[in-house]
Image (tube, rainbow, N blue to C red; front, side, top):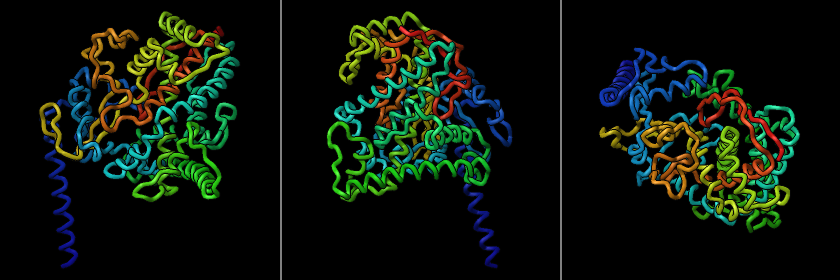
Length: 488
């Protein structure tokens, strides 16, 4: 009798659960356009197997079905892919920022990042955001410029050794540079990624990025069953290794503080030092709390920065007129390439450089899209979409929508001149927007400008093959980012 009652309750719960899902599923299908659906696998069958073809197919949906498209997955699951700037603005400017949630796909990051600033929501997100914001004060960033400039010089040395070898895939070289910068500014440690790209920690970070990309395309990637696969076990091993490294650095630095060893309070403080001095509710952050944020800074800062720098250099290599104009501006500002004294203030005063960077981030945004899960009923495209529905806000599509940018495939920095009449609010969001925008955008732009300025002052960039794009969490080129370098 008890078993029968339990069985009845389980069945009733399942039926009620599926009925609620069905109502939302039908609401979305009845009110938004969607590609042809397989009766079991939904729209998953329209996507090819390779990452570049998936990206290409994804972008073609907006041409065929409009600015907002519904995609479906097994068991009555549906999400809305949004590129209508008005709807994106509605979502990102919701005053209830504290309770904004990332999409379900971000849960795959939690074994490594925990619920740090990227994946947290509610009071935890609000508290962490408040703690971390001072880390990106201009006085702190000014100190970071020294690190960026020093590592840029090492980057230039590596590029000089390759200049005579023909085409160079700059992505892995820039990736090592970005890793050196992010480790020194976030943890105050030197990993020498540029000098020793085969060290255990450096290779593990790179392998972790690839492993996450593979998980995104795995049939079980969005479920707990993925952990039982060989790929899931491999990801777990990498996570443990990276956690051990970060824990060791945090523990050693905390011990220094407890031993009353001085920690610089000025501009040379790193991200870890700031977190070790922070309190939440009157109590210091635990080592686990700090690891979440340091790992999040690592994840959010090195791959995206690598793509931003590499794609900017790629675009400049294919547009010699823009490159020459930028070179002249840099030369006027800094004089000799051997005596470049880079400061935040000097970089901020370069108007054409700013236009070039903005246009680069428009045409090839490092983050092609961001995920959200609605926590309250929201009006999208004139339809009230209930809480719980997952969304993808397509940054790449908005940046390439001819309705937002005429001739969008053309690389034209003049779009961002002060005289331009083109109004850009939520049609241009390379760092997201609203209350949950990228907290590290000033850091990223400073790093990008410092490295690009030094490269352009030292080299004339010549074009290589056209890139073949693939869009996972970070926009990348499946065939590398190849250019030729000619010393100035």
